[in-house]
Length: 293
Image 1: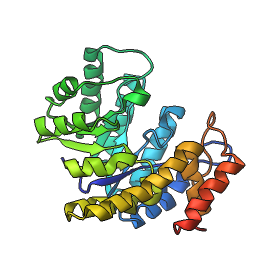
Image 2: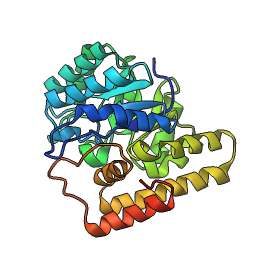
Image 3: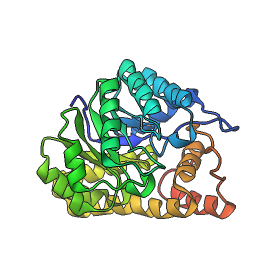
Image 4: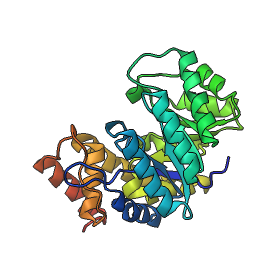
């Protein structure tokens, strides 16, 4: 699989004040993320508010990211959709733009049978010509793929691995043990240390937009056997995550980056603005941890 690096930020989508996408904001956001030592970008996923965007909007963000970052880091395009047609169209665009891989959440909203889900993934692989990473996030997708089903999907050589955004570290380790030739990226930020200790191939997360260096440090500390340092870094991340879970993860991250001068704008409705109390709580953490304007 032609993907270098292990720590990937699931990128936010910059937006204008009216909620329209702002492709011009991709470059400064990308540069800030990469300045933290992050190895690559996972574009147009959950953190990017992709389910609130049209196919053309998502394609525009994929294009702006590739134009700015293609020569700077590895790029994974999330193309998952409720519609196979939309997913296939975005996958083809990602292939043309020079992405290193595509990824896709299972088709959501309707309860699809396994063969329909498998057909959906095969169609995406056909369209992109790139390695495909399954995005397993049962809490949001509504599809909880079992270990056996995930392994069955990965019998297709074009399916290179899984972005595993769940809390079942046992299942994660079972997948790694049974399919050692595939790549497994952990996506539950608050548990990254646990996955790193089990030997994850890397992480893909939302808070990496702001504190990507923390996850790089966890990975380095685990590799060096410095568990105390790894715990300290994970604790730093979790103190922030605890606040974000109160104030809103995507909105909180956008507030923090806007405050630092990285223009990502607001979230798209129906996300609401942060409360005054939420802003105060988050600003206090930011100031105390060196993220003041």
